[in-house]
Image 1: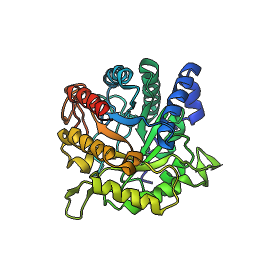
Image 2 (image 1 turned 45 degrees about the vertical axis):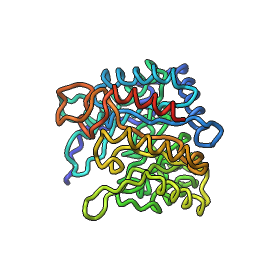
Image 3 (image 1 turned 90 degrees about the vertical axis):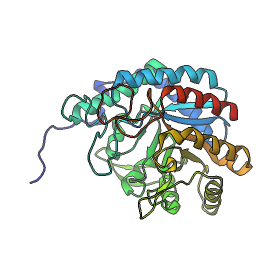
Length: 341
């Protein structure tokens, strides 16, 4: 047999009992959830900003970054709701490289998934406790959800996972907004099919139980650009792209039409420094079209303490996965976004 059994993973209930969420933090998170949900239902005209490192690496450094976001949140709270990216597991195109804190909670040691599950729960909880902000994470592994579902206020399903049935039906049971990215091929119909599937009820196996979900009406689109058959990046955030998505939404019976524009990945041609320019263009489109003003609910931005990326952790606060804009550019951009709204 090719599998080597290393350790038995405790159940989600056992992990939650070991690392419980304080009732005050649970209430704070519930208030944040309500605020974010209202953006997607149209009850609030605030703008959502899902922003932060490509991947969480060192908990102290991530918390330092989010604490800075929290100070800005106080100043822009009348226009913007900031949700920090706390991405604790990362898809790797070739299988190589850092797979996230859940796999490797200590970068100086070998991977340890059992300790990683504890580490990511502690990190999400620490973020809420120290900053008052509840975070976003990527649903890379649907069976991880029970371990952190009481801590997250936003979930994204990535371009390589969006067509997967288990991701879709798991997302149908979440009571927070779930963004479904367009696949790397750029096929918008795949993304819209995923949204439809997520908004429907399903019956399946989850957390070692047979469960039935009620469907998630807050499932929505994330445009992240595409890659053609020649490996060339094709952006899909322009005015015409957004209007085409609005038309495609109108043709389907989907609840709460909404899109978050990812300013990184194929939209930026993998050039992290282009993210502020893309953000400005999306806001211009939103400002100059009633249709897009209703449809575009926010942006997703990759940002950390320092510009760029590094192959190994030499400078804390500089990404070891995708390149990010640094803090000075981040702070300036958030204030610019607030001024444009």
